[in-house]
Length: 330
Image (cartoon, rainbow, N blue to C red; front, side):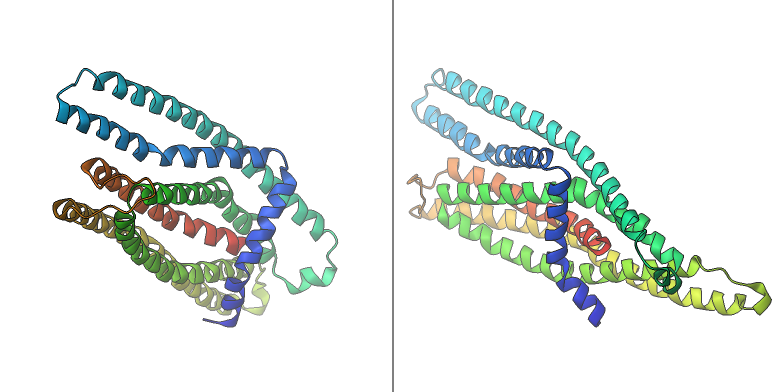
């Protein structure tokens, strides 16, 4: 990795902190409300397994006793409670998505204004030593990379953290042994995400840098009187080729990450199902914070939580590219 790429990558956490601080300065009241809505959605999306376990427990008890009439009001209560909770979640999702659009467009507008006001104070030598296309690239490409990052990636990453934390606590509440099986598989997913994501980040940063170089070259005026057209065209071809190479590698690593994680998630689902069946067959004593025995009513919700947990890791892989591109532009 070249020194500029390494320094750019090392400054990404500081850039993220400055960007978030600036967003709070733009919307000191609305942004915390939107974050509260995102957190509420994350919590609601995580608790489905708890209601599923309760419903399976009622059905299992009724199957053993044969008293299905007593199970109906209990199941109805669980369904109505879950429906009311999901209704609140949908309203919360509508709220934060609606006002996140306001925050995104308002932030981009204010960032362009700050850049323009700052540009008015720059000395003339800055414009003599920097190509006009490169300068305008900051107002167009670099600012536009923040659009998806602010509107989707940051809220989704926050919601993913909430979901992962909540689901992990629920899994530990039900069964530590089953949770350890999932965590082992998730460790492999995290390692792959780190490996492929780091390469993708490195080349996305290089892509933004080369894009500015190419646009800066396009912004130059070539005077035909000096017969410089051929040399300028060769120079452009060289810069365009460098942009193609880094863009191709950045998108290659970005596009293979999601399919790899999806297939690994399916494999983890099968392993968890097999482990649950083995634990039930061998009547392994359960270790949990709830004190519940290991039964079908515990194993089945774990399968759903496995899909949810792996799906959230996949969501991170989808959003990480937009975050990297946004930070490269920032």
